[in-house]
Amino acid sequence: MSGNSNSAGRIDGKIALVTGGASGIGRATVERFLREGAKVAITDIEQDKGEKLAAELAREGHEVFYQSLDVVNPEEWRKVVDAVVARWGRLDILVNSAGIGRAKGLLDMSYDFWRQTIAINLDGTFLGTQAAVSSMKDTGGGAIVNISSVLGFVGLPNISAYAASKGGVRLFTKAAAIECAEKGYNVRVNSVHPGYIETPMVMRRFDKIIESEREAEETRLKQSHPLGRLGKPEEIASMILYLASDEAAFVTGAEFVADGGYLAR
Image (cartoon, rainbow, N blue to C red; front, top):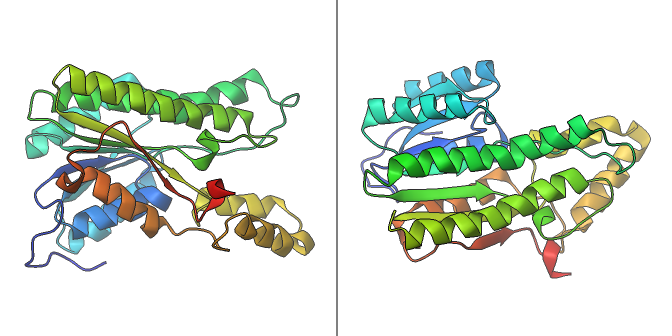
């Protein structure tokens, strides 16, 4: 991506924190935010990827740093928010993008499998929102964007843990938004619900399929979207940008779907 430009961006001067920022939707969001004038803290459980990305972006002239974060650890959340505030004075935007997506049949699923999925996808979103709101409410407010899924609306076989976690994110977002508004915190909270996107998490599903069946499965997945293709991380980042910006100042507690028509069938 290109470095800083002379024109002001849509979130110029804003301070953002993006979880899962080293790949997929998180990375696309980091890069879009920087192009639009924000300063960005990248967090990810994959330290090598996070450090490498931050170094590349810093060399291009962007204000960015990486800090390792396990999203299910409350103490690590406190430390990363404190680090952002110590470096830049406040936190304006949080994007809860970190997550896992795995399939397992109801009768084959262990309790540990269930708990890990819920912990990363839902508990991590709760902990991040709690840590961010605690800081934002004392520094003028902010915007939080939680990444859910179309599978937070509908169920499919073998994804009960994932669907429960993403459905939980959807309704947690609404409740948090109402609370932040009614208590005068000036923090907007919204959710984004992508369809199947060309991210490492989605594309790994094809690694488990024998080569002779891989093309057919990829075609089936694309055709489940009326637009006939998978989405791109950059397309989701555009929606996240809108919700993070002041353009969405009257938007809170909303669910924004970007799914190529998946839910319209």
